Length: 121
Length: 121
DNA sequence: ACCTGGTTACAGAATAGTGCGTAATTTACA
DNA sequence: TGTAAATTACGCACTATTCTGTAACCAGGT
Image (cartoon, rainbow over all chains, first blue to last red; front, side, top):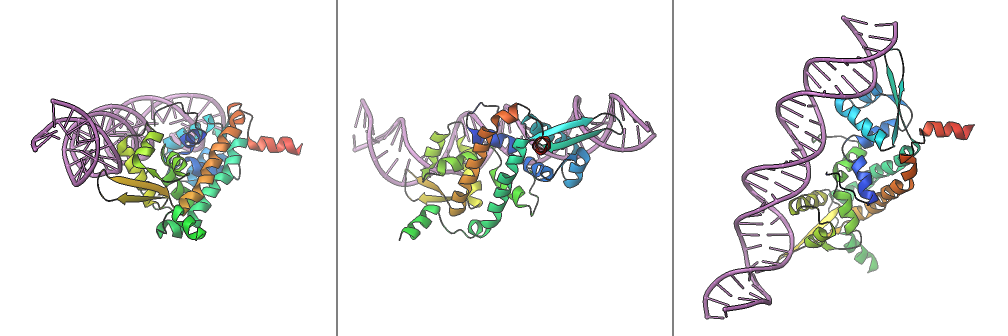
């Protein structure tokens, strides 16, 4: 994915949300502040390095906020920004779509155009 | 992205929609049947190989339907299935989100938690 | 020395692009 | 009449690019 300037908002959004982790991190962050180590526990299959990179990407996109606290054994908090919170229901909707359409997607029901014809008849 | 079996519907959905092309193809297919060459014209930056692969992925996911007509000059039509059509408004919503939150994301307004506090005060 | 959050270096895997080949029919031209 | 070229939707091999993981290392504070 080259860094092409596209004025298409869908493309821009997907540039941020694409991949395995972004939506999952949003999901885990939706009910409050989490620390780096919390997020690792939430999803143990993400590597240390990738988690840091993904979080930074989301931070730069203005979706999560990073807060570093001075002192102790070091502590960094992550939480959603207002735009990030607004994104949560949209992502949930995608998950719902997956479940609701499960049978149709598997059961090869035919095209939507076909369905329209059937309804019209 | 390994082929890990995850029962998380969000993860499953993103496995299909991730990347630069899937959402764009959905976008171009939303108002009717298109041929392979139409889709190439709609997005001239996708290579023929990748377009074929992406379309096949979407077909296997039950989102688009492929219809090959016999005979030469060879002709193949693509259109959305019913689940695919249902997906369209969700993707549009993501695009809208990008535009609506543009200022907030850029203008570093602070976290959502902060916003809640402000409202509460 | 140990903890947490993060970075760097390198390796291997996954993904994307280029160019060539193919099919049967039509059109283009000498 | 012969033949060369274009058309359409790919598949295949090869290369380029990007992504992801492992492991090591660093910072500041107890």
